[in-house]
Length: 252
Image (tube, rainbow, N blue to C red):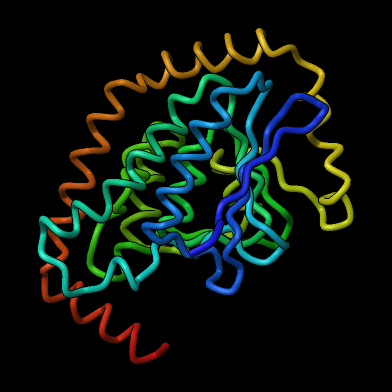
């Protein structure tokens, strides 16, 4: 099926994992989830100051889960089995030994927002939009990203964003604390905004990430993620979800 996730380490001491399926708007398949796990293990073995997670080109960070794998005809058990690999990816990101920076090169929807939320720092290109839209198809965030969101922003904002299924722009999300920096188009490719991170030592960054994981209670958070994924799977056979997926498929 080919390589849809790439990883490289550069001379400045950080690594980059790229989602490389632009023809499908970086919708994440089970094959991509497997490769993400492999690349995270590979990156963990390198002496990195930080890790970047981004998409190829400047179009879409990720449209979420691939509906070819996550279609509406799954049982609760089948749904959980297909959601779990990306939950495992998000947990690997949470526990990665140095900070993980999401470079949001384009819009993100659904699971794309979950993956971005698992990262420690989010830097977005100007004029991008993001939405936890899972509630609009009758389910909950399916990879545990909603549970993480409650830790990363004010809980009442997290509840409102997920419950409405709203798509919000980068500037509004910067005000809410989900995005840390919004970068103008003209400055995006220069990556000057990474200089302050590059200037730090690997030891500093490892200690900072360790402190962060303790403060967000990452071990307990992993348990809450499992509960969320089970809850999402329990809604898979609901009529609301089946109808929403059927409507989406017809529109497509």
